[in-house]
Length: 172
Image (cartoon, rainbow, N blue to C red; front, side):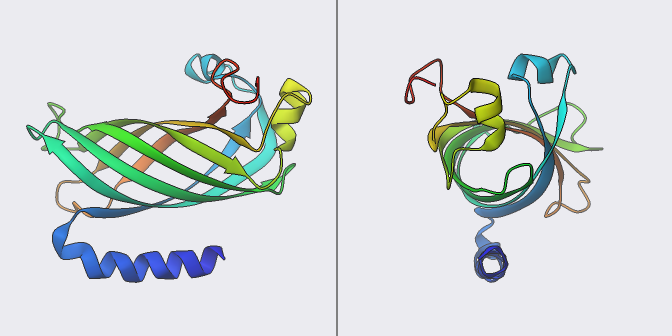
């Protein structure tokens, strides 16, 4: 499924490249057992749980060349302690301008949406007991870095987070 999705997205990206409104991101990471606060303070408890994600998105609107609204869909495979799949859809606001962009093109994004896991993730059960769910909120924060000479390519660092939003989703 993941290979077919990647092939389809690559074909689709080639078709719409001239419009430059579509994008694809591929990333991987390791799960931590802590909260967002722990991540921000670098107090991370890394687990034997990893993810691989393929995303496709569209730039929807840009205001004053400073802020862009994007829509993104994700297919995520977890492996290690947990083996589930995850599907996310989100809207993102991206800040586009930084003073050093002529040397290192940088952007910052924050996105929010919905997340569906094919089974309740093991790490969520370990952290919250049985108070987790397949369907939760999805939150992401991302920095991108690219060389202006190669505008089609960037490196990213992203926080990928599922949350019950203080009990809004199934009391999680």
